[in-house]
Image (tube, rainbow, N blue to C red; front, side, top):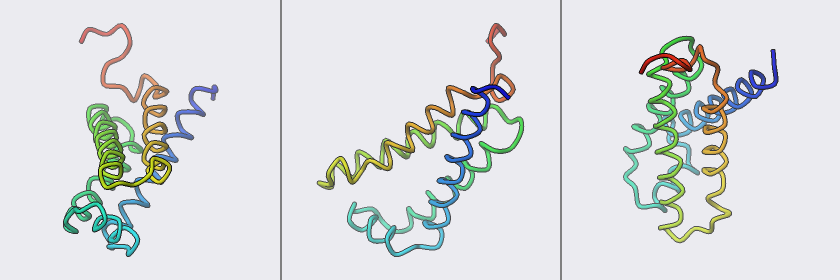
Length: 128
């Protein structure tokens, strides 16, 4: 395996693991996440919706094939992380307290950029 492939699998594995962990916390209504959602002013039922979406994204990123589904998973993660960052800032949280969302965003972008041709919707040079 070359460095690009190792980087892809390292970032994708980390991202999927983080999404699975977050999904688990949201689906089980973990107390720190409940407190965070209440602090942000969101209804608690949103935790279930996000938990299901995060679980789906983690699975989509790890299974072979399904390039278009992977594109949607990456897009959803970007929307969720940028939305979470903006929500924390709007609630008056310090940028440093919101940093984990930016770290996951950076990991998602890195995974997306490093993905091999076999995990892309369109291959380089193919008509789109």
